[in-house]
Image (cartoon, rainbow, N blue to C red; front, side):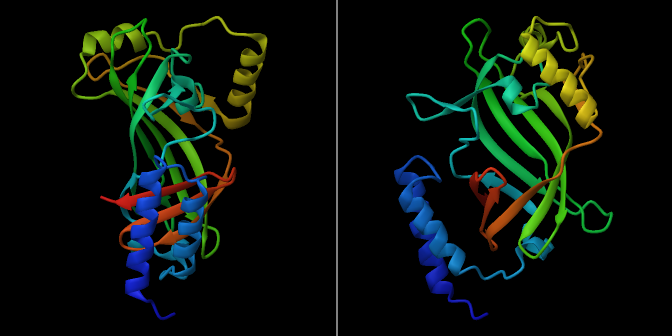
Length: 250
């Protein structure tokens, strides 16, 4: 197809302006209209097959308003630690805010599979613990199902402190991985179900030097991710639950 670079550039500017005006909300009507317009100008006809364009580091520039989020008065989005990683890391009820979300995508060397890790940088906001900065890395892989759809599955996750975080404070809050905790019968039943269904192997101990803990998922459910737009600057995707994310290459 013939690409009108001028129209694409103008459409991307309009989208960025719309995102700025509504704090990154991809459910805003102006953002939806801007995405639909940009989608109609997509210069990449088979984005899921376009490895050279998919590969790189992608930074989320729309709001991280995933399901079960709470938007604070300052516009930031808060979650429980459990929500960020399949309830695998303790304390699962610890409240955190998302500072940044990015994704490294690169070929894994086994056919068409690529990395699909989602890296979430967070800061704790629970008054019962010191303010700590950490990273949850949900590890995943993807491969094309069609020209515009990727199959995605997650294989595990890592929780670790950021370099600015005091390691002793970190260990005091996150060092009790794998210990039994008081749960409702519903949460306990769901935990057993996830372990049996998805082959979840919970974290057991923390690396005493790095503060890292990890879990594995041996039988991950396979999801679908539609690529609405892809070029050398932007990537727009829509998940199975309708969540639309706008990322820029960094």
